[in-house]
Image (cartoon, rainbow, N blue to C red; front, side, top):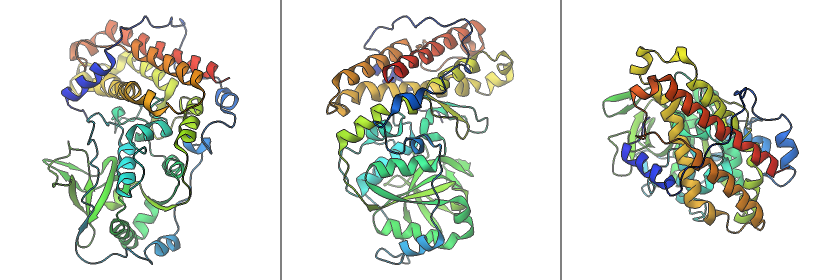
Length: 417
């Protein structure tokens, strides 16, 4: 889903304050398959990174809630009632800074605001603890090539629950099988959450009429913040999904079975120290940038190598595929993600990590990522033209520069040894 040229121009401006440096030399035989030494994360993380770091990477799957747990959730206060209800003060997705292209982080920010959590749990915070601030995504999926959606585009329930746990909360995860087999019960669970003032995060939803377009499913992360009669749900979606009501909702009936999973923040179990959390996020960088492929996406160093390799697949660039927008999948989409990450790193890194005691580490990380931003190729316009993407020399030049940024990740692995 392309963002407006105006917004993309803002991201370019955010990176334009420093002249681009010459990319690191690219080994002649460097390929996307020669990315990270297998022992890099194990050797570098030690005990200083995020707790349950494997779960942050999505290497383990959290169990979904049982039917008994769902029944227990609706047995207390907030039980659903007939009629209609909306969370009217919900923080809209893509709200304060119209470069919030990573969907899950926007949903989590809105949930934390709705339940009255500390303001430090903002959008850049979730980018940091989930790895999106540090790890580039690359989409391999032909049916959903929205690589601009960032690392959160991949469906990883374990990762979502871990991000909520880091904030000190338990999280109820309802998988698609449970949704389909216990539909009415799950609808009641959603209504209970809304009555408690808690938006319900969903990965996708079906039967979505957005203006003159129909999505079944609408694949991105969204927040369910209201309900009507029966199974009518009010879903807070990105502003491009128009028209919405005054609170940013669209009404969807009969679409819940297309959700891949629901997430509800429940009980507060701890009050984490923000400085400790962000320190652990820095020490999790090796794990973030070597995160295994998941759900049709690669991440971190491998994402840059895969991006470069994709631009060199000459057979993929025919007159027909170029007319049909292959530039979005192969260059523009991942470029939006690259620039989004760079924008938030430049704008918020110093503020967020000011309390980390190891100042030398903070500055070394900043230096490496700043040089990555300086090395990022800048087309004449934000999106490449058809003529540019059709030019093998242009694609080769872009590929060499993305591969050079991939190589810079080796400095991060060395830093944490």
